[in-house]
Length: 257
Image (tube, rainbow, N blue to C red; front, side):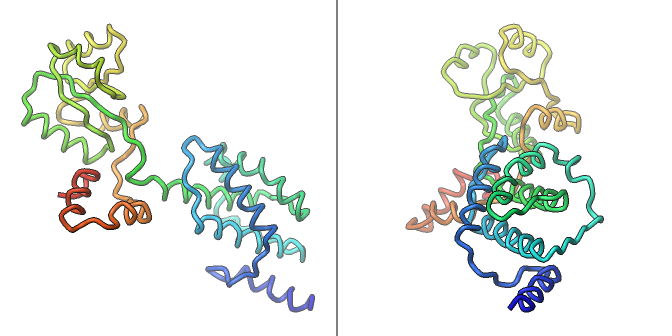
């Protein structure tokens, strides 16, 4: 029996995708707890999917089995993951104690690096279109048609929600609007708004790379075309064709015309 298990353990590390593995209820529960604690500790937590848990479970099952037979395979191709993602790496290391307590299995740098990349992959995947976008107001005297061009130009690079376009005579309306920041183009308007300690950003009307770089550093998200399939399917369920078209245009106007 042990020889059979040993052969299975050795075969595990040669598959591009894990073979079907037995279900271990205790390991699944520990994996769930590990995933919840790691994800909840992120700056921007994401919804934990069944696929994510299964991927983690299969990895832990394989590595715990290999460790039982004292098999360690070190991949030196990808090094310094801890240096690339120090906060996430430390977060994962902290919760490795769950597997130490249950299976006497210690997470080595090899394990921590792989787990860091696995979680980071899902962080990237979960940067979906339904994530909160910064709400912006344009403060300018430029006419609507030209501002429409500016907004379309901005959408090529930055994910945002346009709230309203105002001129200086309407500055009092800011008190009644929900927004994250105000965009302007002139030094005069910038100075007026800045003197009132309002969250104002001055950009070039014809956007330059330095404008985009500055917006990203200020916390704006890059434009993305990822969608959460499950959420979208639920939202569209039961709607007529006309209602679907209307919903998609209103909810995802950046992508559907």
